[in-house]
Image (cartoon, each protein chain N blue to C red):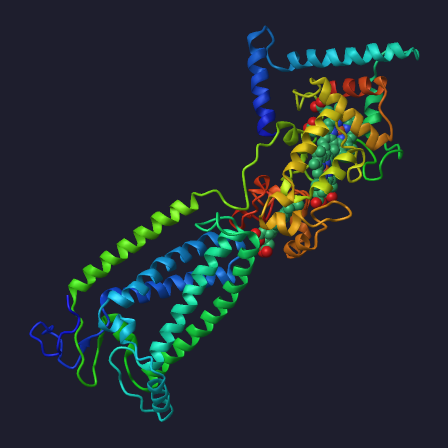
Amino acid sequence: MDARLPLNSPQMDTEQPAQTARVWDLPLRLFHWVMAAVVVVAGVTGFLAPEWWLGLHVIAGYALATLLSFRLVWGFVGTRYSRFGSFPLALGGLYEHLRSIVRTNPKTVIGHNPAGAWMIIILLVALVTLVVSGLIALGGQENHGPLAAATGFLAGEMAGEIHQIAAWGLAAAVAVHLLGVFAETRIFRHPVVAAMMIGRKAPPGSAVNVPRSAHTVRGAAWFMAIAGALLVSGITLAGLPSSGWRALDTPAVYVSECGDCHAVYHPSLRTGEAWRSMMNGLENHYGEDASLDEQTVSIIQAYLVDNHAGTFDTEAAQRIGRVETPSLRMTDVAYWKSRHQGIAESVFRLNSVGSKVNCTACHTDAASGRFDDVKIHLPEKDKP
Amino acid sequence: MSFFAIARLLIVAAVAGGSAWSANGPANAAMMQDNIERYRVEAKALGQGFEAFSAERGRILFSSSPAAGKPDTPSCTACHTTDPAGVGQTRAGKEIAPMALSRTPDRYIDVKKIEKWFRRNCNSVLGRECTPLEKGDFLTFMASQ
């Protein structure tokens, strides 16, 4: 349906006073508020929650990806004031608008005012950056999500840095946005919040009503199509084998012989050289005799050396496994220490943990070598 | 008790249940006796005037601190706790099921396992291998617990 109906058209909604016009279509308003809620969830889980809340953060990210894709498309096919083409982005107009704010008499604008339009562009750019960098970080660092097959750890780590910067950028932009809204409603008495809820604004001059139900149906159809396409492609991509991690065929003797005294360590946690030295010194293994017969030693050593840290591209392999230590310990690697320095000594002494080398007590996926954030379970106290 | 220990217990119980024995203990005890018997043969072969195994000497081996092995493992009780019926812990924090046969009936059955741990643990605590006499005394003590 055509969005450009004249103000006095007979199709205009007659119950409403003629001074207000429907400006924001329902799909746009729903997008705005749902996105605001999702950004709060993503912000709280990203900035404040511990790492094992990553699952919820990622769900918020997928929701944002869908919402943003819809918004970008709606910016071209939506109703008049939703379209990017209608945004007053000319710098001259922005300058005029800012001057009128300084002189404290900005005009009511139908659609976005120039400052608001620029704000939205900045917010959208920050959000798109966050979603894209987040997906790359998830694929590279955690070997999860649709980009797990395509991204390595180092790319993921770089994307993680960008993600953090963009998050602070978004936080700043949201603060400016809220300030702007506050100024509009409180100082200049333009009810912009109400407008974003009911969709109506009192236009200064001629404005056009955007039509009501047809665009809602159209918006819903676009949204379903976009969400469906993202879901199908996302699931397909996520099904591809991850680039940095693979499942291993672990020999039973490794689990039975090396799991008697402590957790069974994944081969990707040490270099081939370190495994070789360790297997050659089992008679004096950290103050104990852990010796094995020669045949068992050679089976275990072959398994460990074949799957050493260099053959995995996970965070654990890159940051811990590939780093040599004189003691051959993982727990002497600086990165290991820095990641665990916040954990009280008393936690390591719990009966359910026993020692810092008992990785499985807190990392329920330690045996697989993944060390996913969402698989961290920090015991608080022992079961009675 | 670990899942595997329970599972093994159930299997052994099922096997033993078919026989005249009322529980699995006696079936295991028989297998353990075979192992003690093996150490008796070895001890006799050494020809150092072997007479019989002693649970009391086994108890002393279990609880003494000879200060001859590795510093982190002064005695068997460092890992197995002073109470043979108690749950022990490795230095890396993993639980060890009680050593007393009455508490962990599937112990002392597998020759390779017993030999592996005697080799390691005696080396760690005593700084040398255990003699057949010591091994037989130790098993005799644990069988009585």
